[in-house]
Image (cartoon, rainbow, N blue to C red; front, side, top):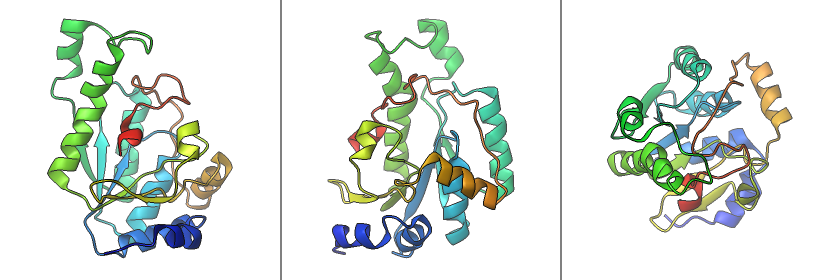
Length: 206
């Protein structure tokens, strides 16, 4: 299938719900990744309205806050999510017994930590699930790198990456949550990023 990416982005790029319907209407194997950070219920609600059983793929590093784990359970129940969780090969307890707490971002060991708890589980998810369409809640205002992205892109392997809410602001996201009476999670921490505007590398590789 040859996709005219520019035309699709012009037509649907500012309409998240229409873009979601387009992506899931391609008839291809689709997944939606999530990290259950603030506003994630927006994309989860959006995709499951179109395809209720879409696999929701979560790379659980083992380092989420208690509030995030409670939020996961609440959203899974509320939206009846088909949640598929990928963990690192070692548990958090195993890793910390040998290497201690997560290294800081200026520690030379931080790259290996990120690889172990996030990037390797994601690569494993892609291999095992072999999606043709990947939906994500990336937003342009998250980081400078994401501001350069398009709502729809195709990577070197032909995977169609779709970011329906790329151009939405935090206010847009909040209003969607309010409109649909969805829960939110503000007590979120990602040890692979630490700083809010920093990339972990997952979206830069794909």
